[in-house]
Image 1 (tube, rainbow, N blue to C red):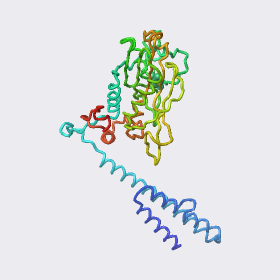
Image 2 (cartoon, helix red, strand yellow; image 1 turned 45 degrees about the horizontal axis):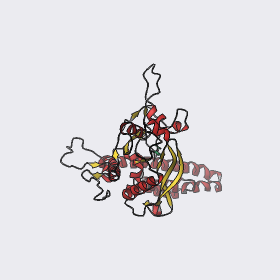
Image 3 (cartoon, rainbow, N blue to C red; image 1 turned 90 degrees about the vertical axis):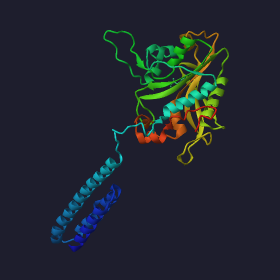
Length: 360
Ligand code: DAH
């Protein structure tokens, strides 16, 4: 049985020497895995005489158990070391005064909102805002989404609680920035050029969806504004925003209740080498929805559709921020992890202006 002792010594040493969980797993497979050394030894039992088997069998089982216990003990120790290391490096002195360091950064969302605002301001648009808790009418009906419409179900709406006995439809957390179109038409009439950046809410959560996210809505009304003006405006915006001269957009016929005709817009890009490049390559990425404002929507905003027409669009701010700055996971936007903020954040005095280019 001396070769069992050698085997035992050699595996116990390897277990003790394993310095991370991956190495330890390799040791486990080599020792007691299906094709590991101990398993191969066990196969030899078949060739032994019954007497030999009586001592060799239990000895091998005991060895297997011993190795297994050693593996478990080592794994726990390694996990403790990893935790100690995290506790040692990831600390935060909450008593530290933030003032002398002046290291605060601007989150990519407000940064991109500033960039978008600067670009559209140059095209004659002003910024409009609306409430985040919206009435059912502004969020849906006024945008030609009546109560039976399937788009309501698709939007994963958060409904506010109603006071007892209140028969009116519940308020909602706005599911898009489009209701600001209606409020702005009512307040300011036509002609009109606005963008409406802000928070929107939908009950959805994965790598590319969070329950709260940001959109920017655009609306231009005039006597003879057409789809051609929409196309030019969006191309001009993308050229400035992504800082790519040869930016190319593709307009795909689509459907939104609040526009007719409607188009979804894709931007040409390449994913070569796992890196996203805007303006080259053979891939297309959807970046926004748009169209000519539906006459019923104009009417809901108090605008005469026989006299005025215009275009509208809606774009995800977080999404274009991810594309422009190569940020892979949307959820990290809202984790408030200081290391993430330092990495993706912007200098607070680094205000985007068109004169300097909105890109740093
Ligand atoms: N409101 C749409 C959404 O949240 C986006 C959108 C599409 C807005 C087309 C528009 C538009 O103004 O014309 O998905």
